[in-house]
Structures are given as structure tokens and as C-alpha cells.
Amino acid sequence: MANLAGAEDAETPENALGISPDRTMAAQSASRRSSFGQILQPGVGPISGDHYLSSDVDEVLWGYVPTTRATPVLSMRSGETLTVDAVSHEGLLEDQGRDPVSFFAGKGVARDQILDDAVSIAAGYRRTPRNFDVDGPHVVTGPVRIEGAEPGDVLKIETLEALPRVPYGVVSSRHGRGALALRPDGTAPDGITLDEVMPPISTDGRSTGHPAEYGNVSTFTAIENGRAVMRSGDRKVSFPLNCFMGIMGVAYSDDAGLTSPNANSIPPTLGGGNIDISLLGVGSTFYLPVFAEGALFYVGDPHMAMGDGEVSLTAMEGSLRATFRLTVVKKGSGEAPGVAFRYPFAETPDSWIPIGLSDPDGAAHGQGSDLNVAMRRAVVNSPGLPGAGPRGSTGRPPTPICRPASGFIVSQVVDRTVGVHGQIAKSHFA
Image (cartoon, rainbow, N blue to C red; front, side, top):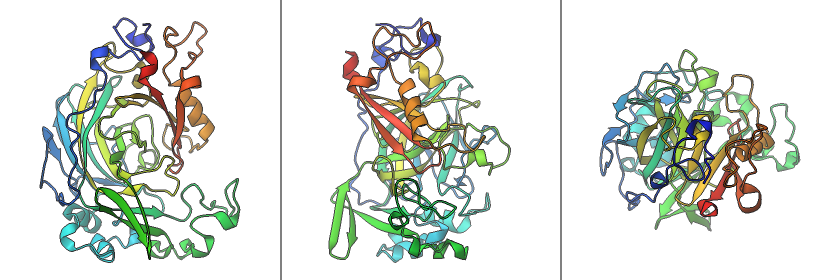
């Protein structure tokens, strides 16, 4: 079969994406499930990785991701595994009182079921000043240096485990954010009326300047019998869990300082970050181009479940203990698709996942949020028909197999840079 990975891999044996057939992702044997009852305090309970990384208050970033100039908090060899205790920002944020003990106590959660690292971060974070209206909400853990990674390589990220650290999460909707948010100029977004803005305009308290009075809505969501359960009076809604990391990235911005707009944790970039693709759970592989020596891998925004599009603003946010295998891939090895050397790409055991972002350069030139742009990029990044090659002699993209037989999905519309991803069955290339 002809190589569709890109000219840089043309000499290697490959399947439809230029990945050696014996190296494609198989289902991970380590996809164990927790009982959802054990509280996984820092360092307590099952830790399966070769290395362990906690979310220490003096090492995490709150609202920003590491730049290429960041100092790593841990180093490891390529191919080794890493277990991370990631902390959810929900329950810690300023509009929730910045006191998870009080916030969750109000939901009936005892102190011994609240994570010690979450409490420490909310009370003691000092690395950067916090501005709720500007900074990202996410607690970001890392960066981790992977030996041998150099700019031009790919970091291959295999998710082996994603275990809830607590048996609950939070779903939030905030004024001015989300698919139905009021515009900054006070008008409704195209396609809806002011009466359809969510949360309702009548509850918008942002003019007070005090986040706790903004009128934002946070809904406590318990885990019961392995499912997420939301209650309001006598009404109950339940849905299945799907644990995955909303943020997985490598250092991308070269800006100095910890709070560069280009390092804000909200928009995803070519270095990954807040990619928010629900397929990237246990058994998935995420490929990212490397921009810094050591790659400088980081994680955050742990999700217990999320609907595609993330339209209300958040997923079911909840702290996770996740284990990854991190492998450096060199050009010409056949161990990563060619597109991954220039753009994020992913796969599951059954599907290729091409990714498109509306504006993948952070805030460098403003912030574009056109879903049409993201859609076109996802299509261009898709594998083509067998024999089509990476690009034809005219320089145009190959005819993608996605046209008749695959689906494209809105990843999220709430991260300033919006995303689209495809799901292309590997069986099409048999």
C-alpha cells in the first residue's frame, strides 16, 4: 500500500497512515477500572507508572501552560510510563469561593473525601497572580522532560489508565461563555435571541466585579453505581462515565514569563493543550509535534464525562489519576503518521482521528473561532484513499476517504480556538 504519511516517511514500510503495521495501537491491557469509592489522595492507592507526578502547589500552573522555556519538574526516558494525579479546577475557582472544603461541604461531601492537593492549591497558589476574567481556569501539572525529544520529533502519548480520584464531579455554566453565551457588546450570538442566551441574562452579575456574585451555575454530579448522577429536587439524570484528560500537551509558546497570552490554558494550539476530544481516553494514542528540547509534556482539565461540543462550557469535571506511556518518535521511523510532525493527530484501536483547529497559534494574531476553518483543516489532515499519496503532484490534498464513509464531529466550541475531529474507521483500509 502506498505511503500516506508524508514525504518524510516515504521510505518506511507502512499502513494507510505510514505507521508500521506491527506498531499500530492495540487495546491496552492496563485499562483497569476503579471502584469509584476509594479517595485517591496524593500518592495513596494504586500507582502503576514507572514515574509518579503529583500536583504540588509550588509546581503547578493555574490558568497557563508551560512554555518552551519552562523548567521541567521531572525527567524520564522515552517509552517509560508516568502516573499523574491531576486536579480539577471545579470547586477551586473564584466564582465558587476558592475554598473547596466549603464548596463541597455545601454539597454534602465530608472533608476526608476532598483532595488535599486541591485544598492546598486553592489556598496556597502563589506562582502567578489570579485574574478570574483573564486567566484560564485549569490546574496544569508538569512539565515533564522526555529524554531524547528534540524539535521536529513527535511525542506519542498513550493513555493507559484514567481513574477517578473522588466519586463526584462538577458541571458548570458561566455567563459570557459557552455555545449560547451573551456577546461582550450585549447582543445575542447569531442564530438565537436574547431570551435564549444561557445562563439567562437576568442572572448575570458580572457588573459587580466580584466573581462569587457573577451568577454562574455549578451543578454537583455524583458517581453512583459507576454512572454520573445529577439531581434537582425529585428529578434525576444519569449518564455513563468516560474519563479522559481534556488537556494533554507539549510546550509550544516561546514567550518569556509564566502568564503570556500565548500560554493561556484555554485555547488549544499546535502543541495540543486544551484539545477536549472525548475519544482520547484509555486505549487512545495522541501524537503531538515537538517544539522544545525534552518536549515538556503537561496535563490538566481532567474529565469524567463530556458531550461532544462541550456546549455548556464544561464537561463533568473531576480529578483523575491518569497513566501514560510517553515515547519519542523520530522522522522516518514509521511509528507516527506524517501529519503528526506538523499537527496534532490521534487514534483509537478502531479509528484514525484527524484534528482541525480554527486558529492553532494561541493568541499570537488574535483568536479565530470559525468552525468552517477547523472543519477544513480536519479534512486536510485526514488519511486519503489507498494509493493517493500524501499530496499529489499539484500540491493538492488527496481525495479523503472521509467523504463517503466517515464522520466529522465538533470537538468543542468554548475554548476560543474551536475544534473539529474526524473518526475514520481503520477497517476501511483493510
